Image (tube, rainbow, N blue to C red; front, side):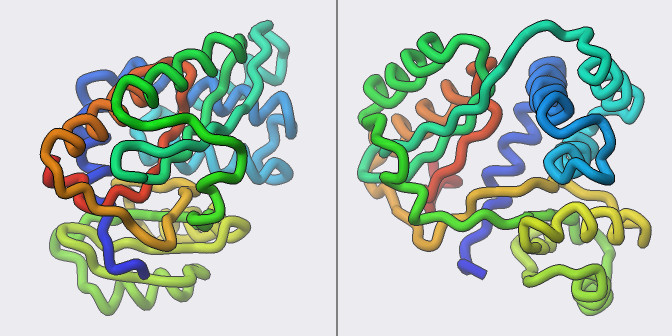
Amino acid sequence: MSGHSKWSTIKRKKEKTDNARAKVFTKMGREIAVAVKMGGPDPASNAKLRDLISKAKANNVPNDNIDRIIKKAAGEGDKNTYESIVYEGYGPCGVAVIVEALTDNRNRTAADVRHYFDKYGGNLGTTGCVSFMFNQKGVILVEKGDLDEDKVLEDALSAGAEDFSAEGDVFEINTGVAEFSSVCEALEGMGYTFLSAEVAYVPDTYTRIEDEENRKKMGLLIEMMEDNDDVSNIWHNWENEDEE
């Protein structure tokens, strides 16, 4: 483990999604539809779709919605053509940022992302400029509540998890990318519910922002990215985000 909890980030996202659930459902629906069109509607043979279903459930997307999106995409009911694009850049004070987008207009999305970086003291970089600082892992967060830590650890490892830690109010379970879906399914079968479950870009190292003004700019940069309909995920290595 990095020793740095991302629970503050997830908690802020959760609070935000509670107030903008429709937007979250729309973004998740778009990701699922693209996965279906690329790999088919059967999650047993479409690993990306399996991962997104786990993520959607953790974001409280109802099963009926998920099934409807899959059927619509499989039946070509959605004629929009989206492409997946990953942008990389730097925020204030050299914070590394990765932005995942699904867009039907590459030029519009690129212009928006560049504008956000420029406006808030960062800059859009080239492919590979920051991604080498991250590793992709499955990250599952479970609320501690009255759960026994040793029991959760035992269950996580038996489900195939690679790593486990107690971070603030949550247990954080890490998996390999290939094992993410099976670990989610195994833990769900044991009765666990997730605060968050997704394949994430996890930083190798983190960057602190000491200046209050730059912390504010970095917070606004993230907020603008998250509010953009084309942006599905934003990852970064900002260490003291919770002080923003």
